[in-house]
Picture 1: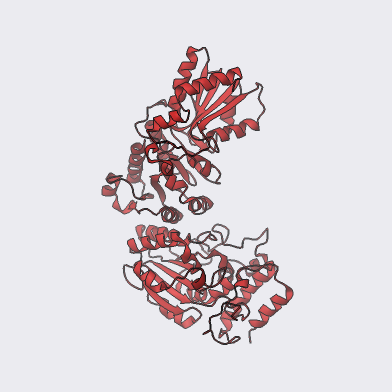
Picture 2 (picture 1 turned 90 degrees about the vertical axis):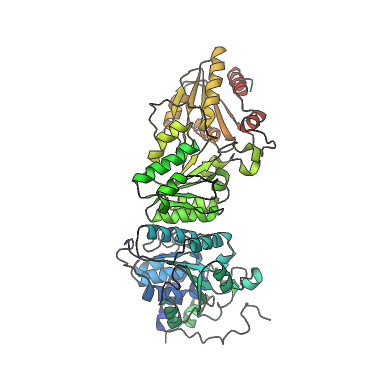
Amino acid sequence: MNTTGRPSEFSPEGSHGLDRRSLELRHLVLRAFGAARRGHLGSAFSVVEILRVLYDDILRFDSARPTWKDRDRFIFSKGHGCLALYALLADKGFIPVEELDRFCAAEGILGGHPERGKIPGVEASTGSLGHGLAIAVGMAIALRLDRRTARVFVLNSDGECNEGSLWEAALHASKHRLDNLTILLDYNRMQSYGRTAEVVDLEPLADKWRAFGFAVREVEGHDVAGIRAALAPLPFEKGKPGVLICRTVKGKGVPFLEWNAAWHHKNKASNEELAALYSALEVK
Amino acid sequence: MRKACLDMVHRLARTDERIVFVGSDLGAGAVDGMKAEIPDRFFMEGISEAHVIGMAAGMAMEGKVVYVNTIATFLTRRCLEQVILDLCLHDCKVRLIGSGGGLVYAPLGPTHEAIDDIALLRAIPNMTILAPADAEEMKRLMPLTVDHPGPIYIRLGKGRDPIITPVDQDFRIGRCFLLRPGNGLLLVTTGTMGRMALDAAELLEQRGIDAGVLHVPTLKPLDAEALNGWIGPVPAVLTLEEHSIVGGLGSAVAEILAESVYPVTKRFARMGIPDAFPKNYGTQASLMAHLGLTVASVTTKAVSLLTGRC
């Protein structure tokens, strides 16, 4: 019996294929998770490689000047996966690494969902799903009105594709021919309750986005070189917003998290569970 | 009032490049002047209010001042979470212009009747709520909305509402003022209900009751200090609004009354739309009459409030 929701075609346990940087970023995620003993760990591990490529190779930013007018805007719309965002913001110097130790703490700035105005580098407060894309559309239009070359990126989850507001915003991104807007879609095929195919099937997902007027690309979402190559030519098509559908694994890197809905959100994680997490992600 | 409001958006946009107009699916020809003159900053986005509010928030985060107009119920009920999170949590300079405040759309039924807009929005931090009495007051308030911090909701009346505000009355967001002085009883109103209150005050005068009328064009932040100043000396306060008696002006005034100590013992009552979905159609005026909102009923209520029979 398949108790985890793991598809039968899934690759062998333990061979996560992550390189040293991906493991070290996951350690930053664990540092914050361990401080609060809670968080959406699976959702964070799902997007580490997407964020890594984005911050390492694509986004124009200056962490010393987080409101620099010509920066690229990045909206982390699946706010619950913010542990990965916090890891990158710490890695890039937007926030001190020590801030991770105050995740969800009363006096900290890093909450269970990210907030604009509290955290340098966070463009929009997110947490309730289906809000980020519309805000991104507004930003992309405003940037174009101001004749700025800054681009707008949004990270959406597949669960967010349940929200009608996301598809409303998609219609308008297309209507306004926003080729300065690119969606990174974390398609891990899991949501809180279980597999997306069982809760509400999104397939044919790429066709849906194409039908909404987007230029669509697909990539394996933990393949760093592949993501980098996919995002190298932007926009994907002139006059069209783009979506990069990233096929990911929720909980990527830790066998007992992968495809396991019980780890969608965890609280009161034990010492043993924390040790097992570090053990699975050992940097060799 | 709507025309005055939207004309002002156009006029202000001529000289301020930050100003953007967004409609959903307005009537044909709406705001055509601005569309022709400043097409880059005119957007008609279709029937997608959740998106419209998020998009307006995104524009405001980039420094725009965004005026959004559609029917009041769709701006408040339909996309309430977007209003709360995208606009108010981010404290965005977005101005929601709600067409048909109250029972303006009486012939169209409960889906279009904005009887709870003030209650819904009053509970949200950072929101400012304006309900002017007439088109002239609208013209005076609109320039102030450009640089006012945070989101604003502007509640529109039917149109061609009688002008009742003095031409020399400076508008200040957050302030209320007397339309008519009087020490025997204070009628507290908002929006276009000032006319009914003034007419009731005339009738009350004929019966020897010196009724004042206080107009509250800013429902949030409520001018509690001034309200208490006017309320203090009178023996009775009657609130009157084209809104549910739950959560609107009457509730807001009741909160102030309940937490204040006055030298004169107070009698207090609220008049508004009963806590039920209106069942009738007809005109705005006929539905208001059916729900007990007439000059005569206000007068009767005021008398009974003073004589202790209510």
